[in-house]
Length: 386
Image 1 (cartoon, rainbow, N blue to C red):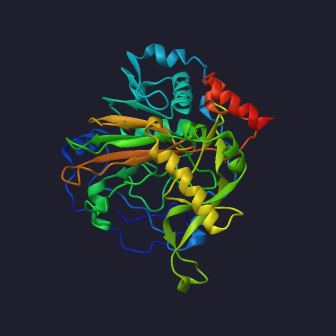
Image 2 (image 1 turned 90 degrees about the vertical axis):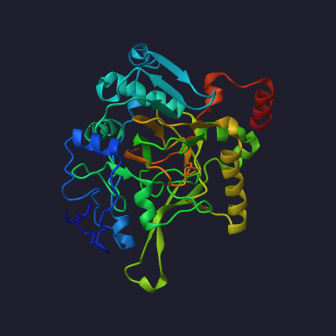
């Protein structure tokens, strides 16, 4: 299958790698059941761009986005009453829904799921019977599907990307000291004009030990900051960069460069109206208007708040056929590579793009909105605001 561009201006820079790895049995069974054509190899690779301006031009225009959570029943009765069990995994982040199939959700339940994800940041569903096509259809409910110019995809289903660490290791070898996969704290697609909203990862094959994924709450990270420090970063912007580098068409001799976008350090979720810290160590490059030393110091501290406060994190142990949906606007995540590639791991992922990030100084924190502030927090807020 010849690679094709996701944008007609993109010219492929290399021959696609020939896939020689055997598919895990559970993966092959799922793909064949879904009618995925594997006759010309797996996965499918779109044309990979070489030049920076080609990537900048992809989706470089304002697009309307209505968050489904904003039209949901606040009590989420249709979704939660249909579940056998609703398990909150930690106080601040993470909920598991038992007894529902994502492919069978009604429109009302999808809206309510959107609100639940916006409130709890990440929602887990085990024992899912869902095809890549159904996964894409659900993703379209949450926003425009991102079709990535660098990532392998399920043949015939553009926008459903393949997460297969063994395949990634053929391109970038991994080892214990330099883990593979997504083993660093990050948020997806921060370089987009309108970055990622909800991501849905379905893992059909997982190692018997290890391979957990961790998420940290942007709501809670912001709330960990003192009210006085919040005033320093509120309304400020930073430069967020792409995961992949490209060449300047006019000056290729200058070497690889990243796609860069300017977004707020603190953003507001349109469905909840709550403020969230929105930085990550991998792809937040610098704070606009500050010297490099100043920016590095503040960004390092903000990332530490996310990464070092275990009470605002959730660590999830996968089981086969599990789906996880999380909101990139209010989380960072990290995939543990502690199984070191000794067993297969394979999944498919759909990422829905959301609104252009925005900040509203009048927006509350999550704890303010839910009435969770203790007396010390109330007094500290009053001192700063007065």
